[in-house]
Image (cartoon, rainbow, N blue to C red):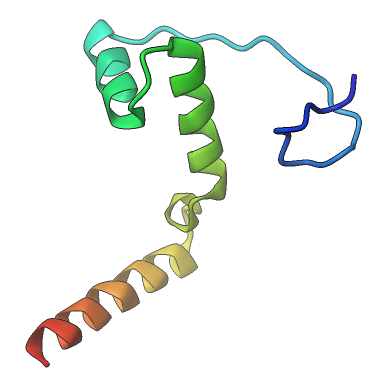
Length: 80
C-alpha cells in the first residue's frame, strides 16, 4: 500500500495497522475539543502525529533543557 497524497512519509510503502485503546468518555471528548474535531478517528490521528513531532514529548534531559530555555526567554522578553 502506498501513502496517500496527505502522507507525511512521501511515496514510501507503509504498513497500516489497526490500533485501539480504552478511554474515559471525558478524555475522548476533551481530545476532540482540543483537536477541534468531532471525529474520534481524526482526533486520535491528530494527537498521535502531534505527539510524534512535538519536541516536548522526548522524555529526556534535552527536552527539559529546551523547555526551560523557552521559559527563561519568555521571562526575559516580558521584562524588556
